[in-house]
Figure 1 (cartoon, rainbow, N blue to C red):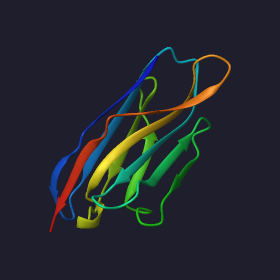
Figure 2: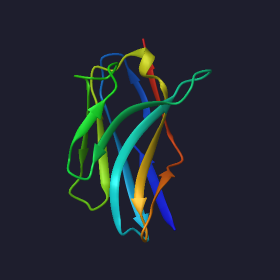
Figure 3: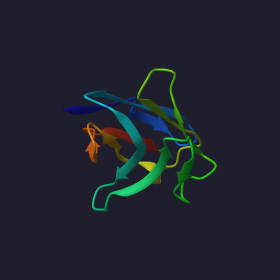
Length: 119
């Protein structure tokens, strides 16, 4: 059993910043990658950023230069630093981990955290 718990969402004005956290716990052998997705009302869920086990990161073009995904000092925790936020960043943000519990890796999702950017 693996759980992903997100925190850090909220309401912020355009141009402001937020930090989202995602902590994975449970029967974890290793983590292949951790990602953040977001879903705005009426839109499909989209990939925002990914960090792999070797520390490599990838970002959606819409957030490049504004968002930074990094691993925390706490084991199995990642942070999404969101700067220069725009109203179009408003969405529910979900953490997703591809996690080995035994010999195989499976995707696990968090419950989501709301980010609202006011203009």
